[in-house]
Length: 195
Image (cartoon, rainbow, N blue to C red; front, side):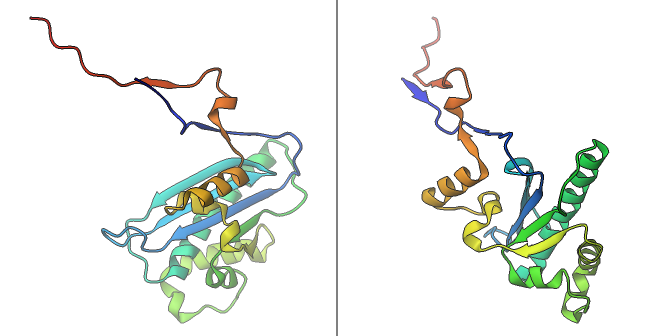
């Protein structure tokens, strides 16, 4: 029996794109039901093309969703600034500062706020890192509605409809259009050993 693998996807790159850097940052607070750890993820786009992404489980347990989202935001900001410096080194100029999009309002409001909240002392390094980048204009942190959070695809289980919607928005193409042939797997009974 032959089965076609329908799970192969590729990234569709377009040349008609605006030279901007946009990062979607997301976290799934205590999403792991076994040990209540969280998953942090980001997707970085150069124009409409995804150029970098990551999804990692944290070892430590976060005490709030804002803490988890902000740690994810700091990680995404670090990677975004690294890609920005790489592009600058290659002589590629951007017209605007990179945007970081986060669905958590608490994390979004903390980034430009110069008041250091006593409840956030345990993440003060991340707070100062992101706040400094916002203050000097290196990045802009903005809120994105949960339905438009593309990094959700990397942090939590979603319905098939939502997965397909986000897959299209990220520009993940069905692999059949980019591969020369379909990938096939043969599944069958093993032949009996020779006697």
